[in-house]
Length: 284
Image (tube, rainbow, N blue to C red; front, side, top):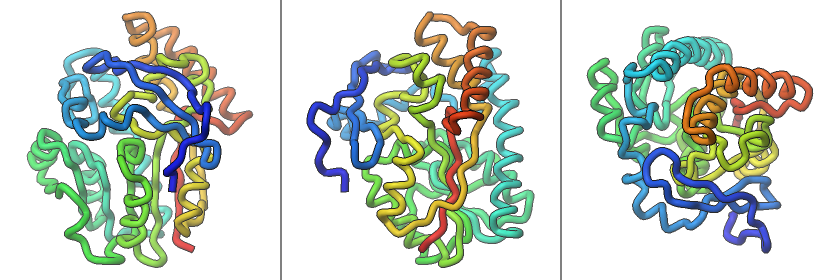
């Protein structure tokens, strides 16, 4: 799977705005309709690209106005996520969150009677989760087959070096009637088209893959999953636009970012191409 990239497939060139300022290229897989970050040699030293206080999903920081807004929106989004998984399973059950960050989603799921498990490779994020009495594992190999009624990956799949291996592991862990919930950015959204190489959701090289709606569907259907539902993540357009403004103009223009985020959501209602989507899968 995905062993050969299409000839003349160069799509766009981006830099790592967060840490190193190194340059990377994105290449297009026509068969799957996804983009790949190159060179792949960055995978061998990925840890260094996460070593920043500005990598917000690994902190609970509220130092700046932006971080304070992020934390408020995150709380609202988490409540919506818990409501979603409860509606999908028609109640509570065994939940696994992969890429759990600082554990906030699992914390709220636990409060809503879910039996929780979580995986997070980052040491600092796991320590913050532990301070909330959320114990996270470093990988999924310790879990038995068909252990989970719902598995979630909130903006995590784009970070995974080997997608095929990851999907096979998800299939192993999910019950036969379980639901898989994947959230990823969408490079076909209006805000992606507007900001181009400055689009914050490219986030190279931490994001090794970049998905379209067809891309997600094609990859998972090849591994015997059925796509049941696609939901927009409308707040992402504003958050991503704000960061993109910073990368493009060296400052956070809240008014312009709000306008571009608003336009992206308006155009997304017509095109069904939002800044990010949630995908709900079940096994065939």
